[in-house]
Image (cartoon, rainbow over all chains, first blue to last red; front, side):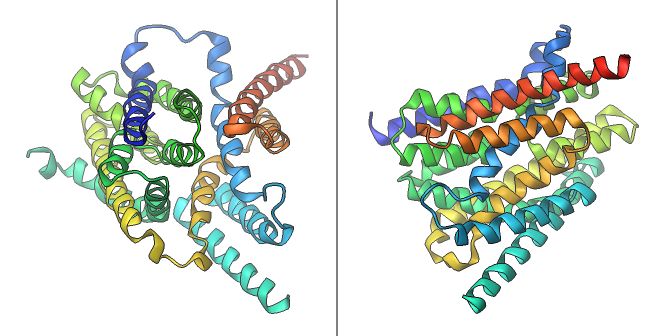
Length: 111
Length: 234
């Protein structure tokens, strides 16, 4: 498939699917009752999906040296603690980036 | 435009500015990714303006660069966007008093950050229209700054030094969203199963580990919820 056509197909299909997901219960199912099992499963979607999204970005993929992921893992844990207590995106981002830079600097100074 | 002079719209816009600042590195990374995947400028803007979801955009450009088939890219982006169903279900009661035209417009602006801010504003009470205008202002701030940072990343991506590790801002934005959830045991079970699964199945091609581990985590969380309910009912 032609690269540009493929990209625009993604824009169109994912754009429509994303919008329908966002609109779903606000407009489409607004008058219908959510089945109890589904409502219960819904509660765990953010925790499961966001964790599955985040971990591969933090933990090294096989073949990558541990030294590359260790500072990222430590910075991510610190950022998660800040997020847990403050619920602030800006504070989480600032803590995580500063911690990563400090740890990377320390790793270079030592090694 | 009447909306621009609406005080609630303006307040929503202004209150969202710190969050737009926090999302700036994420937007830059998305723009860099689109450029690296060989997207045209129009295609990159199409992604950020229409798909308007950082997670879906990152996954789409990475899978596109890896040569994954269209069906896999679409399915992965859809599963990563399943959380919008939850946000939609949670927003529905708040938006019910608003006209359908407003509901359809606000749904487009429903993102992780807009959702968090909207729940706080609607819970504060008052007129639903005022809260709706506030949501519209915040959503518009997020959408417009998202376009600016994506385009900036598209053009300036290779000027950003690799030593800054800017791409680490992406997991941090999601950590900010997910960590506050870890307050009940079924939620922690869901995250542990999804996290262990995504790492154990990293050998699967085309990021299929994301879908499998995510669904496994949702099932595990639901089962843990039932188990907890039985335990406390005793």
